[in-house]
Image (tube, rainbow, N blue to C red):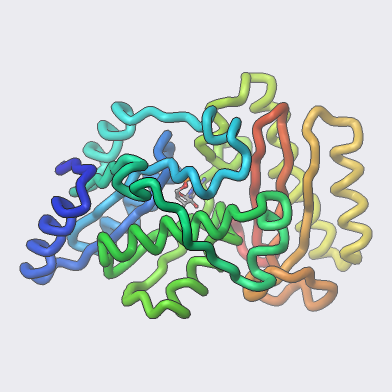
Length: 283
Ligand code: AMP
């Protein structure tokens, strides 16, 4: 695996691959890699000739300075995992390379970035769109792989690609879970053994909500049920929403349509976790 933090260097490497007619698959990450990230790498290997991953903890998408400071960083382990799992090129830039002291551009996605995560993490998606645009322009991939785990991010990136005419295809990869259901996340590393147990509530709440909706309970009943699960529990619920994956707005009917997705976010201690589940797909 080739590793570089230089834009000029990675562009030269990619240009050589493109001259040889190789298709580039790109997996952007913030590191502290787990099986979820590696499932994106596996998909990229299936679809593309060359797999490029990036590891960059992007400061502009963190609205909470403490979350940025405590974000897990395991670069040596990550490099080993990527190498073993068939990544061809790792882009690992510094803040100086990615921002050079500048942070002047912001994005507004209308309603898409004002609901759910956007409501609780102001400017988060502007930072995501900025870094993803920079990375797309540097790497110019044919395919870019994103996890369904960050459903709102996925919707926003698809919009970004469409509106800015990025010449690439976004591929969605399903959520990888721990055996008892907890969605894999780099932030899980910050949970104690007990907290990991407590964190099962997010998956359990989604599963229960899915069952109730499938049995024709109303959105309001389901909302109340989910809130009641958290009422006497160490986890704190931030939001539970039943939305369409098209516009991320709440659905009040036609739940069994394929766009319905249940989204949840909350805290275990000071660690914030998110998860989601389609109503009519196993996820
Ligand atoms: P992150 O490093 O958290 O920014 O995530 C990098 C990519 O991995 C994003 O596209 C995430 O959606 C994806 N990802 C994170 N966790 C999972 C998971 N449990 N299953 C599948 N993809 C994931």
